[in-house]
Image 1 (cartoon, protein in one colour):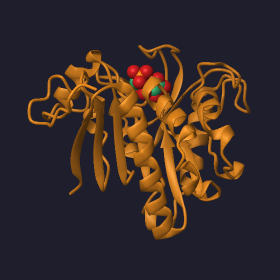
Image 2 (image 1 turned 30 degrees about the vertical axis):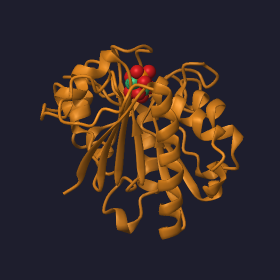
Image 3 (image 1 turned 90 degrees about the vertical axis):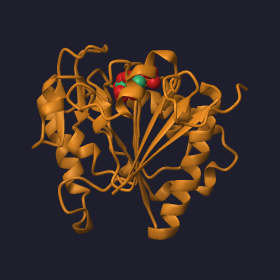
Length: 259
Ligand SMILES: O=C(O)[C@H](O)[C@@H](O)[C@H](O)[C@H](O)COP(=O)(O)O
């Protein structure tokens, strides 16, 4: 049974810096244990802030970047050079500043890529990428990602899985096209909750008072159809990394002094 842990930081900047430090430690430990590691990135302000902090960390090169596989939990289905693209933001924040093996960076197709505007084909192709990178030890068609980073929305979405959306009911496919997404841009590609749950560690990182209700509901047993982030659990560990305001409606957790 995986464990759920909650850590609260005094503010969003400390949250991002501490999450980056955690990434160094965990990725180095995983690489020491098995020679490589896999990390799933997320979009959103907190997710990208963590990557920027990791770029600036003096410890970052303790990670063997050449043996790190990078995936995305979701992507906005926009042109490759669009500033809204999670991949573009991640490259600017971190990926283009560290010596990754380009063959181990597994981006989701852009809307001007090989599938054109066919978002269903882009989703199916990414599902195949996941299947191609799953090993016998993964028992299926998705790698057992070592760390999956996720954000969440105030209404409880995570990745691009929104409450009561077709994606939240998906149990067969690992990656789906998302249309008419409440959070712009409207068309996206997203891992489904069953695919998210193949991760060893799921880290839910968020800040801001607007997230406090979703955080409190998710940690008090809400159902995933109404609150998809409640279904984002890791095999080994589900770690909530919050700032004080996002944790504001939690009563049983340690709240650090305001910095
Ligand atoms: O592509 C996206 O938009 C993200 O994957 C999305 O799930 C994001 O992580 C949350 O909406 C939180 O975003 P903020 O951290 O900016 O609130």
